[in-house]
Image 1: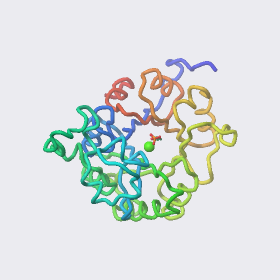
Image 2: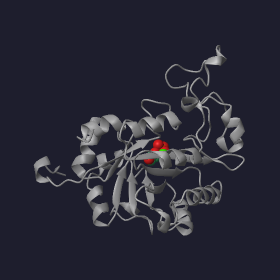
Image 3: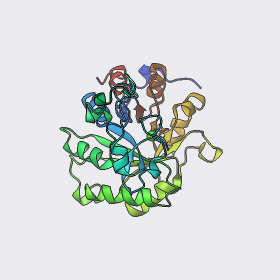
Length: 279
Ligand code: G3P
Ligand code: CA
């Protein structure tokens, strides 16, 4: 594979920069503070993972359990929103949990509180510019459709599922998943919401660039592009856009730029925008 030279592609379109779990290099992932920072840093879109609590709320948490990113323990699915609201989701980043000084906890609720998807939708709705949202459904198979059902309900409430209600200011929302079934469920209930099919490995079925039926955007991990750089051209030839995760290193940003990907999902939107000449 020979990389095209910069000069050979003077008309290269702009790459969209998506903040992975917010500006998660600088602020605790999936907190309001991380998303506010991402908007400040000029991110075109915000990525978040959603999980269902025991009492049916969608919250922005990546792991199955809260152990890594909070001072609590146990699976999100076994906890109610009120339980999660008691936890500190911020102090693990940086200074660590202030167990001996409990009064230090929650000193900045935007940095330490669990974030609901509803609150994140409010944040983008109130932003002073258009910011897109890329929502990833986690553990969709466990809940047999409830994650997607609740998601579509919320998106409908915020006016995202009815194209007639959209304005130039309505943030574009897309749903991402490693599960084709999850994307299918969302499409069945809300056909105007684009789907992104996430891939950790390039299976023979998708090597030619094709995606599951009805899915428009490919979401390969950066490792796929390092080992199969021709994948981007194949996906484009098949009519798909390509959104790559998680692109933090300068060499990976460069690779994505050279291959002509449509979006990079990164923990450091500010630095990536600067490298791309957008910041
Ligand atoms: O944006 C896709 C990417 O977030 C998928 O991996 O584990 O970070 O959710 P993960
Ligand atoms: Ca994710």
